[in-house]
Every structure is written in structure tokens, then in C-alpha cells.
Amino acid sequence: MFQIDERIDYARVQQFASQVSNISNRLSRELEENLTDAQSDDFYLGLLAGYANSLAVNQNDELSDEDKSSLLGAIVATVADKIAKRGL
Image (cartoon, rainbow, N blue to C red; front, side, top):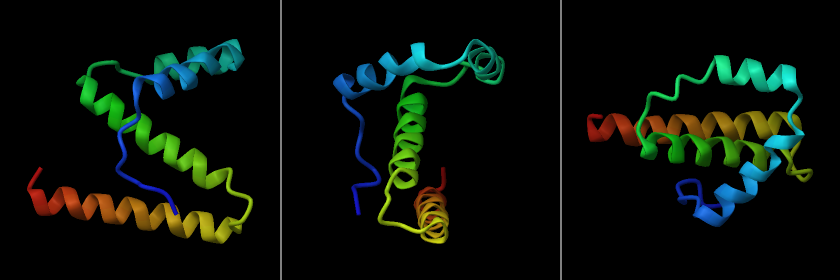
């Protein structure tokens, strides 16, 4: 397992960002059209952490597809529960 609430440091942000050149033009346009870019910096750092963790789960060859789905669902439920308990 891995830390699910770890902040991503700037070096890792840059590492992920360096991959943007590998995205097709079509997909890049579609992603830009569906990204409002209207949220806070903390929101986007959290969003990146969530997607990066999802990517790590999906790339884990030791987990079956069912286990991957179960783990992602459990992470979503656990984080949502933390948010709800904080009243956010």
C-alpha cells in the first residue's frame, strides 16, 4: 500500500508535467475543453495527488482488475468520509 494523502512535491509535479508532450493533439484539446481551471491551487494539487494515486493503482501488476477497482472505491469512500466528518 502507499500513503494516500501525501502531497506531491514540485519535482514530481514537473516530472508528471513533462509527459504532456506525449498526449495526442485530439486528447489534449478534449482535456483542455473539460478543465475549467477555475479552482484553487490546493484543489489542483489534491486533484493531481488523487489521479497520481489512481494511476499507481492501475499500474500495479500485483493487483487483479477487481482488486484495483475495490481499492479505488475504498479510497474514494474513505476520503469522502474524512471530508464529510470535517463538514466541508
